[in-house]
Length: 292
Image 1: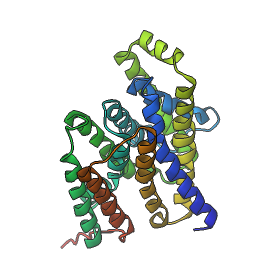
Image 2: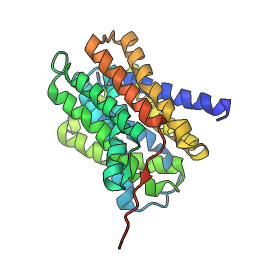
Image 3: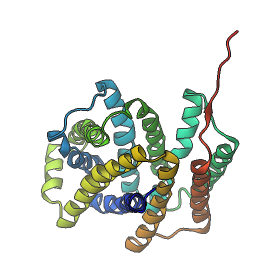
Image 4: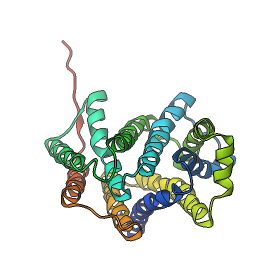
């Protein structure tokens, strides 16, 4: 990778890490359904200028509901219910574990021994983190958060048939497909009056956080990431995502004073270590089914 591309990859990881903090600030003023809906409404603005990519509506909706709606709504609800931001940024990156597991089940992409070791290590880390649940946030909130990496992983696999589409156009329309049902959900759960009151009372800081999360983190950062994946092998690009939980955890400790107990910190580092092993391992090979 060229130095400029390395800088872009690091920049994207930093933006995504800081987005966890910005989301937490916005959730102080907005219910999670509305905050997530606004995130995607802002990121969907380019749909006014770009055409729908050559992807079928069922596939587009399926990708949107998993990769975006399911992932980020679960994040927002969990953080709003008290899951620390730094821990959330680590748990979300466990999507690598679920992506490999689902690929093995659906596409017969059997993990290599090195990837298997990474999966085992990351799983141990998750179990260590589970041992800290119930002290500063509920089991229910943690269960909601776990929906995020699972839907993230499903979205990764659904994205495969659409990789020929222009990344910027695709992500814009994915955001639109998420924003519409999320606004409908907000009107049902919060109500028209509550939604209107939350919007008109949004502070300048809240507005800035939403512009950062929607415009910079969701729209521009995903587009830059897609360009990197288009121009370079995934093995060179994806490991930079390991910076996200470090940025998210560090920023959370500075902004919110988040503290990590020994067991939780060890679990977080173990998860990241397991993910690193998975990412740096060679890609799994599809099994060949022999017929008589």
